[in-house]
Image 1 (tube, rainbow, N blue to C red):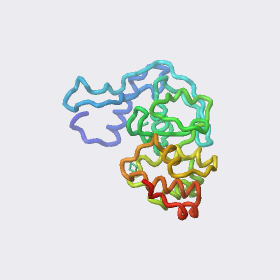
Image 2 (cartoon, rainbow, N blue to C red):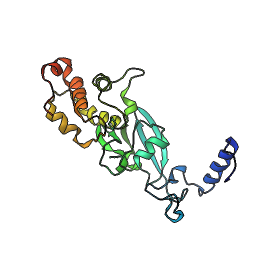
Image 3 (cartoon, helix red, strand yellow):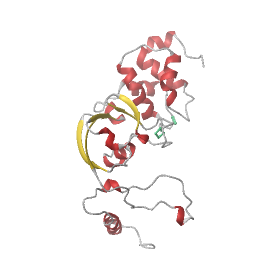
Image 4 (cartoon, rainbow, N blue to C red):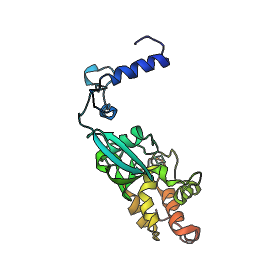
Length: 220
Ligand code: FES
Ligand code: FES
């Protein structure tokens, strides 16, 4: 295919060729491009696209944002890949891929988990909430409105993770001081905002505009 113009027919051929590598009974989600760094000029170090990573799919039933899904899932498939690729919910971002940055945070039975270090099969029979589940139609969640009002984001890459970390706190309707908010979000990294605007957004959402006005957060 090298040297040919890419059109719909060529893409179709490439997809069929890739799917042809599946053995009977194997699900497409066994096929995974391994993560990792490799040099473009070093063929030996490139990930082998299309290499089956397991043979036995597992039936997985999960409620995602209130909607039931039944999928055959490869035992090594990461939850973040399942969410983004199998379900097409690309609001969940993947940053570090090893559980440090918090950008891939989703709720599992109401509690935050890092989807990049959780296996998709672990959510069988459970309830998953992604950032897409925050909105009600066109209406943004109060946390999202507060982030907007306080400029709690710049590039926005980290924002879904922050929102999902904060959602259980918001749902508990607890008043938090600035240092307590910093503690809650201490597992989420943002490279743009410097965190102050995020803290103010959380204060606005949790404590209301009056509390924000009465108690400025210029304490660092
Ligand atoms: S991508 Fe999961 S914690 Fe960074
Ligand atoms: S807004 Fe860019 S990383 Fe947080």
